[in-house]
Length: 409
Image (cartoon, rainbow, N blue to C red; front, side, top):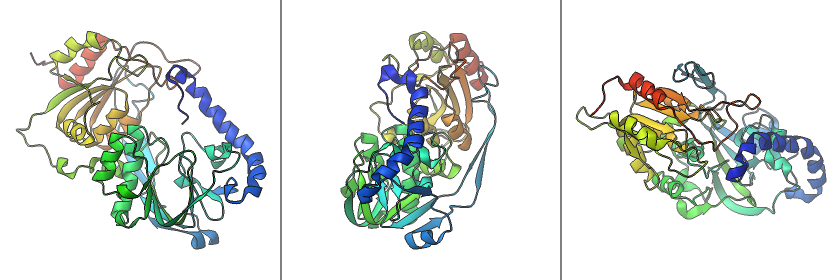
């Protein structure tokens, strides 16, 4: 997903389709023009790693659960307004199980970590990108040619993928990939690992999970690595829908927190604030809502200075979480089953990803849409940074329905 400046983000719904069309229609010409560049030529075609062709048997090996269908049922929920079509209906998440691929002479390209075989085929199941429905739309086909290749001796683990600089995407994409490698006993034996480590949360997770941080290679747009062997775990998610096993991998990040809470442990009611900067999906009328939150014993918290472990512990101890839509809600994967989640939205941007995680984790989820209207032309998923104005009456109604009429003085 191309990141636009904040003031231009309302244009995002148009930018994505334009870029995908550019890849699809300019890609065939660029493939021909780049062909004389050898290893710098664009991939000549695409396939999936779990295919059964002769080339697969000689070039790469798949281990794990690549072809068995998995299905997770997400129950229907309700909120305000009732029966909202993006959020309320039941859903089924269909995916495969975890698997990994070992590629002899494989290559990894770009800051989106596209995986290319030794015979110059793009492996589409290992090279996900936002809203890309067919391989020809992948952003690798918007390049005139690939960067200069760098040879890496030994085994290179690829845990990086699209948008790993976002906390939500890092947790749903990277953490399960690390878990696959750890389950296979491969982490400590890797000679190098392609992984982003520029943020505190990235470094915390990498250190916590046993990734050899002294062997990291930072990804960039100029990345083009050619390895003796690439080892690539696969997590089949489109950025919104995550399989149940991947969600459990996040929840198991801190095993000591998985024990059931004792009856005497204090359960917290928390509201997660996104601050007061304009166009950050903040709750614009937060001061107006503070008396309502206080009546239900809900404390305002900010996660900015907290480690992932501290965030996980707080979410685990919570009995009720109220929050505007934002990356921090991926932490509901750490919650005790039955925890109540109330998510706040602008009608200009409604995303069901956390409602999916809540359903997979057995949480009691509800929602409130703020004031305003979706666009007739662009629907309810077009203004990524839209601030949220929540009706005080709607918040009171939602809280009363979730935790009862009794309030804490």
